[in-house]
Structure formats: C-alpha cells, structure tokens
Length: 125
Length: 276
Image (cartoon, rainbow over all chains, first blue to last red; front, side):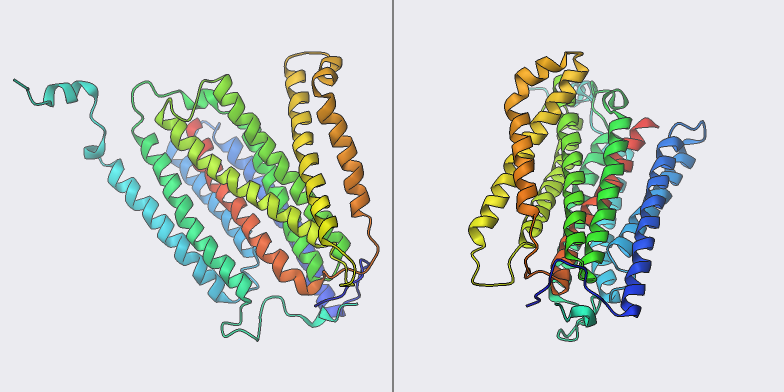
C-alpha cells in the first residue's frame, strides 16, 4: 500500500529526467497526430489519382496507429512480448479483413439483382 | 510519503514474464478486441463494395467538419491520458487527477458529438438502423465504438473517485465515494442535456430566453453539480493512491488509447474513403 500526500513528491534525478523527456515526447507526438489528421482531411479534396489518395490515407493512418501504440501505449519501453501479443490479435484481424474483402470483392460475389432473380427463379406449375 | 520512486514501471520481477499481470491481461484483451472490430469493419466494407439499389448518397449525409473535430478531441484525450499515467508514475496525484478530468471531459465531448451526429442522421437525413444496409453496418460499428468510449469514461470517473481514498483506514470512505459518483453522473447527464439544448437553440435561431425556459432544470442542476464536484475535489489529506497505483491507471490508459486507435481506422475507412 502506498501512502502519498497530494503534494508533489521528489524523485531521483535520473527518474525525473526520464519522465520529463516523456512529457515532451507525448506533446510532440500529439502535435504530429493532429497535423497528420489535418493532412488526411486536405488530401481527399486534392485533384490527384484515387489510388494515390487511398495509398496516402492508408500510410498516414498506419503512421498514426503506430505512433499511438508505441508511444502513448508505451510499447516502445515495455517488454517485446506485449508487442508480440498485441500483434497476434492485430494480424489475425487484418487477415480476416483481407480474406473477407477478397472473397466478397470478387465479381462472382456481387449480389444478384431482382431482375436476374426473377429470370432464374424456377417455374412453379 | 511514497517510497515508490524505485518502482520500474516497465518490468516486474515478481512475474515469470517480467510484465505486470494487469498489463498482460489488458494487452491480451486488446488483441481479442482487435478481432472484434476487424469483423465489424469488414462487414461494413463488404456491404459498401456492393451497395444495393436505392442506397443513400453517403457523402451528402456525413459532416466531415464534425467528424474531424471528434477525431481531434479523441487524439487530445489520448494525450491527456498518457500525461495522467506519466504524472502518477512520478507520484504527482493532483496532476494525475487534473489529467483524468481532462480526459473525461474530452471523452464526453466525443460522446456528445456522436449523439448529435446520430440524432442528425436519423431525424434530418432519414438514415436509421433498419432502413438500409449502410445504416445497419454504420450504426453497429460506430455505436459499438461509442459504447467502448462510454465504458472508458465510466472507468475514468471511477478511477478519479478512487484517487480520493483516504490513507487512514479508520475514515469512512465508501458513502462519500458513492455520493461523489452519483453527483458526477447527474452533473454529466444534466450538462450534456444543457449543452445539446443550447446547440439546438442556436441552430434554430431561437433566443436565449427560449433556451432558459426549456432547459432551466438541466442548467441549474449542472451548476449545482459542478459546485458539489469542486467541493468533493478539495482534499488535502493523505490518500491511499500513488505511484504504486500507476499500473492501474496505465491499464486503463491502454484501453483508452485502444479506443483512439480504433477511431483512427474508422475515421479513414468509414468516413474519409466515402469522399473519393
């Protein structure tokens, strides 16, 4: 059990220096995240190729994602097992998304229209 | 005083993995939650690949300004959450409380924006949960995310109240904590109703007297609630909350940041791609 006063507690110099630098790192990361979000919003209105916009959005979102998990969620400083554990779930999720999109994105998976359904329906006598 | 300045917050020698059990549990949970949201996002995308005839024009329904604002708010709440963990790892309880309150406030703004957005979509754009496949997948995905945010806000509030637990075990605390929580809840609900009422009044170009007539109870409850919360927040006595509790706040922070990264994906996949 820790008994602490509400007042600021002195910490050793090295510890304080480490956490102080973290404070600045977090603020800088937040600024970078905000700027990237702004760029994402601007980029969808640019008169450039659709594939380029989509690729840029994917890259920018991935950068934001990685910045949050490695800095805000401390993966950069934690044991590598935490990263492995999280990435197992993430890879499985991405694999599921990719597989489902590949399956349902195929032309044969396009839903039948009502007209086709009408023509292909068996005749009931 | 705390002797916790020697605590190593990234390694725990008492566990076989070297990782605190609470943190390990949270990472395992988040990994499973990734798959949950992966399934929801896939479902939304699959139906967007083949929209049935008569599907709504989504780019005319969405408000990119509101969604961008929500995204910015959630990112800033993540910053405050990271600073709260950082403060408690240094043993700064008051700073931790301030950062937790900031995170709660930003989380509530995000939820308010989502409530406003859903209300706008249903009543003005005619997009409901059941009148189109897009509505079904959109509300399921963003609503599930909103539920995660709401659970996160509840957890933050409980942790904030927990930070006032007195160090002296002979002092009664439970009744005060429950009262603190009830006041917090009532103030939040009343405050949200008052702010949404104000937004509605401004949008309808009505006068301030109309707002006061309709939302006097909500506004006065909010003011009284805020005064009570300020009173509850004044505590200079020793508390049983410090650097040793940093792992609790960090686990909660992991959950909160996860909600943020899910929104990063939703913002791009569900909202931005619709404008192409």
